[in-house]
Length: 221
Image (cartoon, rainbow, N blue to C red; front, side, top):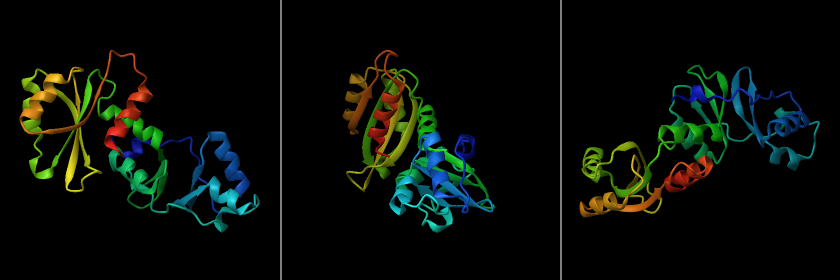
């Protein structure tokens, strides 16, 4: 799941000589509020509609506008997780992708990245999401899996992130193949694990986007 696999070829790059009005036209056509700017195959940053509207000069060349997020990029071989991390750091819904020679390859949108991220966590599979909080020194996926499997369930995938409520701890998000969590939660708690959130899915009737939104709320990316 490398970044280049998810490049959105429908997002065109602007050139410094292009005018602001052209940028706004493209943004309207593809329904976005930002576009990458590329010069000599080098990523320069993003221009946003807010920047253009603030300057209020449709004839102004992009080269005359102070671009944003010039460091909002990842190398092509980086995992889709890194794309989401960079997007979160810059509060951007696009991340540029470059090769080892820093040549611009395209952009990955957050919509595409989240879709890939959700697939990687088996979010489409029937089951439940369980979120634990613990010290990194206490983390053992083997031990957690052993406890979960003792309740006739399996971990489909797992994800580690920082606990925003306690910098000294991590959050471990687990996607399980069972929807019923009562016994699993009780057993984990009996072994000293702290459960801070959970999401139980019903039969496949839920909306995909709602499930993704809930998962991202748990992860707090």
